Image 1 (cartoon, rainbow, N blue to C red):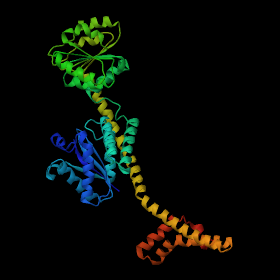
Image 2 (image 1 turned 135 degrees about the horizontal axis):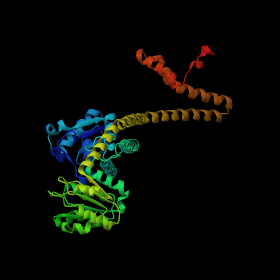
Image 3 (image 1 turned 180 degrees about the horizontal axis):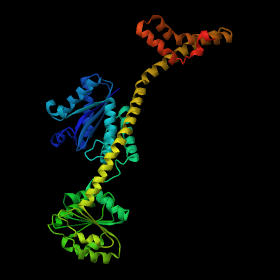
Image 4 (image 1 turned 90 degrees about the vertical axis):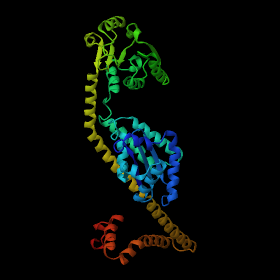
Length: 438
């Protein structure tokens, strides 16, 4: 059985090309069906297993077939270019093709976040599981690919459990959540306020929303823009509020976590505002995260009791530390993956021998049936049981040994020597079986 992974990703192709070859989620099922029909049309492929993984950073086809590697690769590229309306010379320089163990290694690395734009990210694992689910529904997920992806998920879990690859924050948004969790433990018990509604605040809101806070407040110079963000979060089942930035001094004491990132040239949160908020909160801590440059929050606020103020520099240090920890974990992760690749390839070898094993079993059962029928006929004629049993044993032995003995008598040269070397292992022979030793 041949495995092949064919595709492009952020390492090999610019975003403009990745956009052109990406499959929308609703297109995956029909694309898988079309791919299998295409391979059947060009012949020599039989039932090909196939899965398509398409994200903003990669579009890949995973397939398994009995055809030759080169034939499968050429046909897959041909289908890929025709389906996406591209010429081979445009896409071929950006494509990669990973056969057999390379395909296994690639799948394990992708699932573990080692091949991602953000090292160690976990989103790709969910995307792979969705790709597998879709292939299963279409009927293109066979024994080999199902095993490949299930092992990929297991390897990813092992990597995250035994290394620091996914344990550290490596984005400002993720680091913000980690810092808040250091103070409060559970974000789900806290109220979060976002000041601003730009790209950074949107990203932070996604990370905090995943923790399901009690309330998300949003204040922005443009109330409509803040409301758009609030509507998006409400759609995720969160309790949200919006208010005018002018009302911030009266409302800020209500919130446990404040994340600010505006384009203001001067601080919008002063010392006096937070001194008053601290009094109203009666010593309940407040975490303040200032992602703006210039800063939104006056630096003197950090000196107040029960206030934990973090700037973009603090988060930058945390992100860099996380990156260093993840890079240090890469070697450990790669070692785990190499071991698991070997295990998977051994499993494939055992699968490849299944037809031969079945053939041997059928052959032996056929011999048994023949000899047992002979024994039954002799018993019905009244032959002695001892003679029948000896005849049965001799018949079975002679027929099982016929092939090897015939080979020894007729094979020549290297083929005969290979058989001579192999027979002791096949029949578990040792020196004590030698007639000269008896």
